[in-house]
Structure formats: structure tokens, C-alpha cells
Length: 199
Image (cartoon, rainbow, N blue to C red; front, side):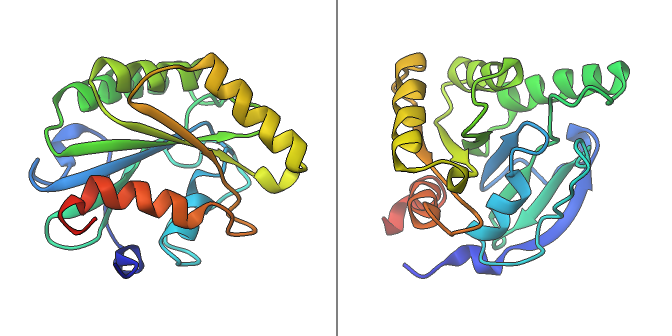
């Protein structure tokens, strides 16, 4: 199939679940620590330079940003986590909101979780993995910024992750938005969640 993610268009930013689009159709959530390369990964997968706003300032995304693919399919960019300067009250709000989102959202088909390949599996990452596992939600991990390591380093990081995380619904790959490495592999996973009838 052709790349449907080139059609992605910004729809809205939501600060709570009531502001989200109707819970119908199919959507995939993108999550990751602040500065894990989440926005760059979304832009690379969608083959668009500025769909998701990238920033060198950690914690910039403090809302759920919805991108429409068509009338019934969406990508949801979740707030970055793990940034110390975000006020405690805001962190509590998003922890509660995202917990409800993963438990209640019927149209959610999968979670794309971004982790910097040099610093994977920190506290917030484990929480995301636990939310996905508890919700029986497939989760695909992108070990981002893979261009920062050589082949041996990438293989070691991948093996370490697989040793630490063993769950039938959790898969992992290396990824580099800068060099477009792993982009097609990530799209193939997304296609299975959003376009299963065409795979």
C-alpha cells in the first residue's frame, strides 16, 4: 500500500479526554520521554517536515495533539514525560488523564513508544509499558537516535531491551529519523493496526 501517513493533517490539541474526537474509528498513540525524538519520528513516518513540532526545549508538548489520516483514522501525539521542570500538578493531571485514556479509549489500536537508544527504560517508560500491558494494547518501541551508536552498539541495545522486556504484545526496533532508518518497519506495524484489511 502507498504511504497513507503523508495525508496526516493537524486537527486539534486536547488538554483532557472530553476534548478528543469522538471515540470511533481507529487511532494510534505516540508517546515518549521529553527529547526522545517523538516529534521527529512522527514527521519521518509521515514523510512531512513539520507536521509535529520539534523543539530543543524538553517538555514542550503539554497536550494531546490529534492528526487526522482520514475520516476514521488518527494519530495521537501524547505529552512528553520525564521533564523535571513540569509542575507537579500538571504531571498529576497527565498521569490521571493518560491512565483513563489507556483504560477507556475504545478506538485505540496501539501505542508507539519512543525511547532514546542510549537511555532506554526509565521510570516513565516502564509506566507506559505497564499501561499498555494492563490494557492488553499492542506496543511497538522505537529505539530512536540509533545513528548515535555503531552497529555493535545498536545490536547490544536491542538485545538488552528484549532481555528486560518480555511480553507478547510488546515489540521493538531501532530507529533514526535523521537517517530514515527503520521508517518503513515502523509504518508496517502502524499499517497492521490502522489498515489491517489491506495488510
